[in-house]
Amino acid sequence: MELNSWGQSFINAMTTLWSKIASFIPDLLAALFIVLLGFVIARVLDAVLGKGLAKLGLDRLMAGAGVTRLLARIGIRMPVSALVGKIIYWFVVLTFVVSAAETLGLGRVSATLDAFTLYLPKVFGAALILLAGLLLSHLANGVVKGAAEGMGIDYAAGVGRFVQGLLVIITVSLVIGQLQIETALLNTVIAIVLVSFGAAAALALGLGSRELVAEIIAGVYVREIYTVGDRIRVDELEGVIEEIGTVKTQLLTDEGQIVSVSNRSLINRQVSR
Image (cartoon, rainbow, N blue to C red; front, side):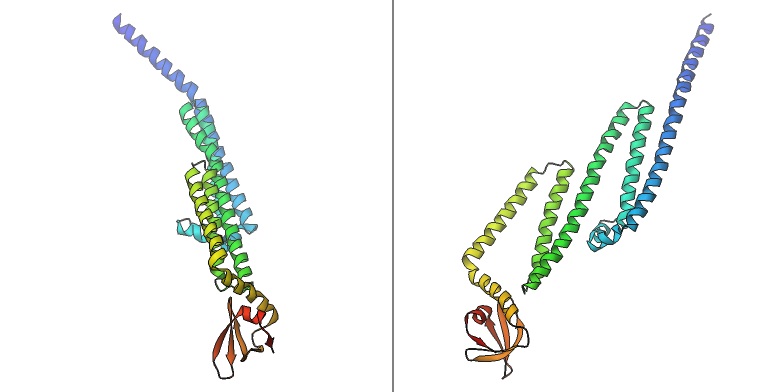
């Protein structure tokens, strides 16, 4: 009698187990189908988006902005178009994996993956901000450098790099904010640095650099009036213009000597040709 009772209990347990397995198999098959479908869709989007961005010239644009070189330094040696495709690929895959976990009733796993998937758009947005900021800083470097060279400023390259570095710092701050990382301290430090630099520059220009600024401005007018090769006479000095610098102009005298003349003197004094 007792043996029959144990046998019946075993049969009931196995029946319950097989019943649960039988009810779980459709969910498992559905989850596998969802994951497989996700991989297929992700693969298609990866190929289409990667090739499309490459044909639009994204790789050339990013290479010109220095983004490709920056990615190579951190170990990412693939075109930016392919990188964007891979990001979309894994985003789509994770989205379908979340759906599969919900189908299997894995609530905690689904919640964790769902939170991670919802955070990915912020990462993608931060990457776009970073790329746009680096591109803008590169363009600003060229524009500022060209404008400074047009004014005859000797340190035009340094001015361009300073503007580029400033824009990169601002971009990094925006990227960190997009990732919802606390940036109050970083923003405060950046603000202090910018205000300090601005105050120092204003103080230097207002007190100790008035003469220098006047020479630089005079140099702009000198370039409009004279060109290299002109023969001029300033007071008792006569020679041929060899170079018009930021603050001084160099003359080659008849004796073969190079003499520097301040740009202001060429504006304020009587000069004959």
